Amino acid sequence: MEAPTPTPAFPGKLFHVSDHDLHVVHAPDERLAAMHALISAARARLRIFFYMFADDETGREILDALVTAAERGVAVHLIIDSFGSSNISDAFFDPLVQAGGHYHCFSTRKGLGYFIRNHQKMLIADDAHALIGGFNITDQYFGRKGDDSWEDIGMIMSGPEVAHLAGYFDALDTLSQGGKVRYLGLRTIIKGWRPGIGEVQWLLGGPTNRISPWALTLKRSLQVGKRLDIVSAYFSPSQTILRRIARVGKRNKGSRLIMAGKTDNGATIAAARVLYRYLLKRRTRIFEYQARPLHMKLMVIDDAVYIGSANLDVRSLFINLEIMLRVKDHALATHMRGLIDTLVAQSEEQTTALLSRRDGWWSRFKGGLAYFLVNSVDYTVGRRIKFGLLRSR
Image (tube, rainbow, N blue to C red; front, side, top):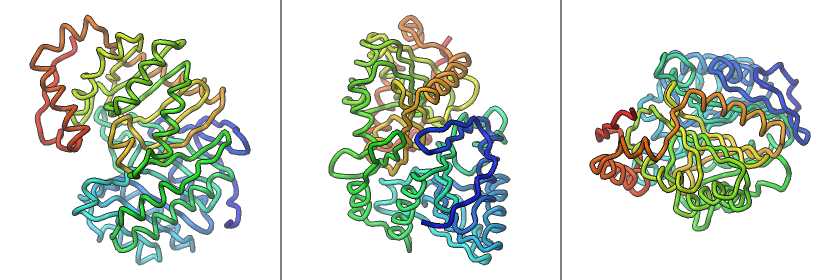
């Protein structure tokens, strides 16, 4: 255990759960302030992993902060996913390396790396504080692209479980040195993960020959859940997960799904819409968020909150490396449902009447093709195919 980091004044709404302080950071300026606060708080070590890191205003701003931390003696370890960050050059990170920091890519751009991506986002200051969520380090995630900026959320955790996450990062760091990631090594890490039994748990998703801790916990929670609220940028789950979501809707006090109404990948919206009729028939309310592109990954099942990097699609459930934080706390769950209420107010509710007006045979055909591409091929293919979505009105 490293020396404790002094507790700084973090942004966001504060909750206390089982010896942990949790700050919910929703607004773009809160999330950016959270990143700077953790970087500034570090005294011994910074561990950073992001799926996407861009050479833009935000990327340069965060890189400068990491360089400053390294210059004051903090051991900075940065990993990015080689697929998600394929447009950035290694030379961009030279100032960090020259300041004494460490940087490398996870996986390679050929072979295994194309199929299995490390979709996680985490920033860990010493063993004391961690920031996780759905956002990457690009301008689009911090309100700097106007109406094209992503709607997202994050959480800062301070407490004993941060050391658990730091140990996981170190295992990934060792495994991915030199850019050579072996499938068996990944599988060993995921299979050996123990999320614990307390109110605060880290759940890992990734490629294994059995269901991952993240997918297994979600499956079990849906089996007994009575109230469900889901916000997911991509929605094309396995049939097992879909049926369990539908059963919650049939037996519960109210189920809501908030999906993307705007995105940079039309295939993902088309794939989600294929499932709407099935869920609507089982008393699940569905909304498409209209204010801006949706990138949030947030679930509230009864009094348990799930927040992190995983979407509700087959890739996030069974293939990509994902990190989700599960917190069981009534006050936090109530707060998150209130936040979801604000998203619903900016959304269009999907109804059978609306679907009948919007979705002709050609739309259903494209939806079926999109569902196949997203779940059986790769969701990035949808960015290269024009999935024109009909107006919902």
